[in-house]
Image (cartoon, rainbow, N blue to C red; front, side, top):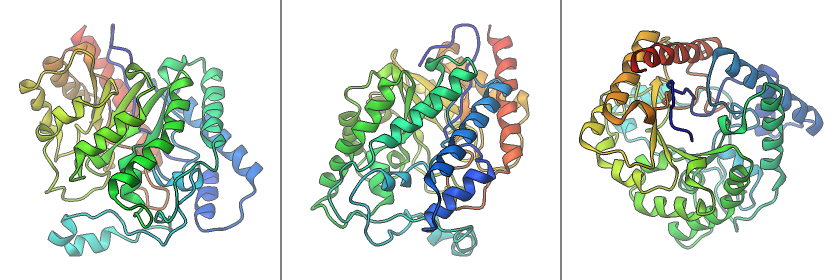
Length: 368
């Protein structure tokens, strides 16, 4: 991660709208339907070429592959690791489902199926080429656009979110399961770190798990060989449009987040439940070796933020942590789970990102 020198850099969190042809392949694979590997590979490569080109066109500084090859940011690991052949796991608990059951019922069971099998055996690698293939596709697409590798990132789930989405039916304890996943995922983290790209570790478990300290320990254990400046950590409160009344406050976990190895922290900053938390940094000193990537765009609404609003949000953060330490991002992914009816229309998602880059330009003119 590079500090801002003469302008506010822009990026996003990971998932971007997938073209229909690759979305269809991914859904069919999830439902056990035959998809020709060579066709799928060609579709993924084409989708990554398109999504990288679109990111460059709208002016994003730090780009990725849009997670085009993955059915979701986390459950794709079932294709790469052994041990995930167990009975379907329940969805992560959402406390607000008890508060607002009618809304919860309408919110769930949308779209086609995506499976979250439980862990029923030892976690080991069965497809080490998967991440290498993703790296090669992204490298080819970014080189074709003349994008420097230092301005490219790739995502991977934290050990804690893997264990959250895949119930443990094999290991004797949560800690044993957590560190088995950490030891396995280290291969993928290292591969991305060695590629020259920035590794983003997705950690929504850090806002919900009761044993956050243990989860941070597992993250740092797995990331021990990747340079901090080549990593960013993303955490959020679940990328869904809902009450969020029970979300833990950022002020209660920020010091713990500072203990993670990645040099950049990606945080929600645009949605109505967490936009006010920029004020946390009035009372908390950002460590010298950290930068923040607060969300300036809400990833759950089809409102297109006005560029002037984006600029105002950026300037707020810049005024409390320094203009060099704020990279403008999004609250979360804009197409997190292929099985859900998209919360944000694909064309609107790109328009929101365009507003992000325009707002960053306005903020840069004010701050420099």
